[in-house]
Image 1 (cartoon, rainbow, N blue to C red):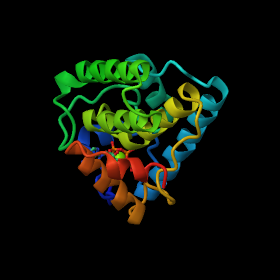
Image 2: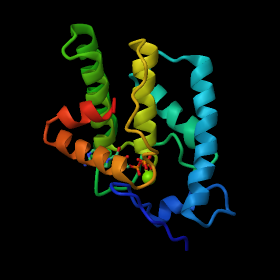
Image 3: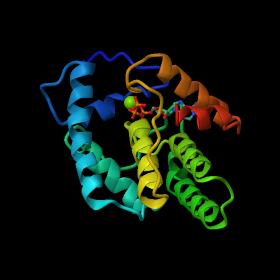
Length: 195
Ligand SMILES: Nc1ncnc2c1ncn2[C@@H]1O[C@H](COP(=O)(O)OP(=O)(O)OP(=O)(O)O)[C@@H](O)[C@H]1O
Ligand SMILES: [Mg+2]
C-alpha cells in the first residue's frame, strides 16, 4: 500500500483509483508528482501547438484531462464514479458541467463580468463539480488559462508565486480563496489568480 501525504484541500484517492495507476514502479508521492508533471508537460506542448479555442464543452474538457494524465492513470479523461468529500453527486456531473459551460458562454456573450471574473468563476465552479477522481485542480487551472489565452487573448493567470501543488503559503491562500468563493465571494480568488 502506498502512503501519500496530501496537500491542503487535496483529494484522497480511493483504493479503486490507486488501482488505476499505470506506472507500477512508483511508490512515493513525489515520484508520482514528477511522473504526472512529465505527462502534463506533454499536454502543455499539445496546447501550445493546437491553441484550442473551443473549450467550453464536455468533449474538450475530457480530452484535456486525458492528455494531462494518460501516462499516470487508466481513468484519465473519464468522470469520477465514486463520491468525494467535495463535488456534486456523480449522477449530476455531466448535467452540472453542461450548465456551467452554458453559463460561461452566456457571460462571454453578454459581458456579464470582466474576462478575468468569467475565467475565475468558471475555474471555481469547475473544481466544485469535481469531474475526475484526481487532477481536478491542475486540470481546472490549465483549462482556465486556455480560456484566457486562446479565447480572451490575454496573458494567463499567475496563480500565486510558488508551485501550488506543494503545500505552502500560496496553496493555503488558493484554498482559502476557493472557500470564500464557495460562499459566493469571489474577491479573494480574483486577487489571487493574478498575484
Ligand atoms: N472548498 C473548495 N472549493 C472549491 N474547490 C476546492 C475546494 N477545496 C479544494 N478545491 C479544489 O480541489 C482541488 C484538489 O482536487 P484534486 O486532488 O482532484 O486536484 P489535483 O490537481 O490533484 O490537485 P492540485 O491542486 O494539487 O493540483 C484543489 O486544487 C482545488 O482546486
Ligand atoms: Mg490530487
